Picture 1 (cartoon, rainbow, N blue to C red):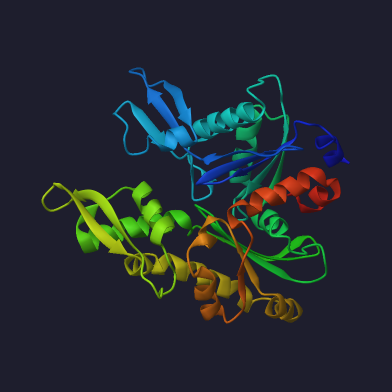
Picture 2: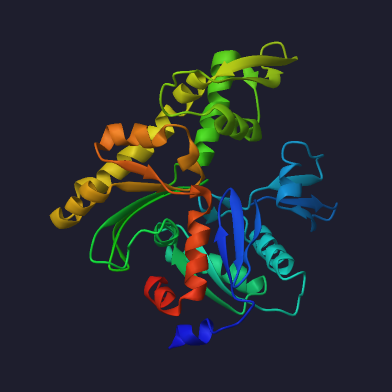
Length: 345
């Protein structure tokens, strides 16, 4: 079998959850070795040539704070490659770092991709990894990896429904017998929530803040439902009327109002999937409920919010941020599972 050749018992086999917001790398037998932001800082010289300055956490610290000749960018947007060259450099950096910078190692790699990627986009991901130093690449759709990581019985003859809310996309998948029966990928997720908060603060408080601040607000006081004890935080930015620096106090109720539209779009996308389920699978979902994974699942009360809309039990996976990565880790150790789950090329 081709996959037996691709994934033998080699110590340098690895998997990459190549996320819009974060990249998680797992090495076979070692577990998670990298969990860093998908951000790259590059410097342009007068001739236009780019030089890599930083990747991951170090690069994210530079976002919004760089001089004109340096840019800190996220090479993946909405789950797809926005800058091929920078993505390739980022993957190369993570491969070397995960193997203690041993450049002679050419690992076999599993890479998770959103369900909704076109063949052209999938090919771009694969070519970026191969150009970055991978020997072989196998692609796996995120809903499958998320379901495995959440320990759902996807190989059984029963329906399991997972909603993976990442940075760029929300992946919805109904799985049975190891395959996707129904699935949907919508480009509304954590990033859209961050920008919705930025826009809300601008409109209500006349305060200009950056995307990083929007993300920080979402994490610290973000909520999908009305809280019994309201959360508050002070934010800083530039007043768009006076042009002076200013600070204001915002509440969890502000954030709930700000992110209501992205959350509603995610819930309605899930509702669309539920409405077209075959009756027998629908019965399984009614009995077993729906599992949320991904960083977006950490928004306070999101399970309750979605449950109120779809009228089904909703559960948040244990450690939802790592569900996709844990799914790929399991595939690294189980050849038969990988053969069943991987995308046919």
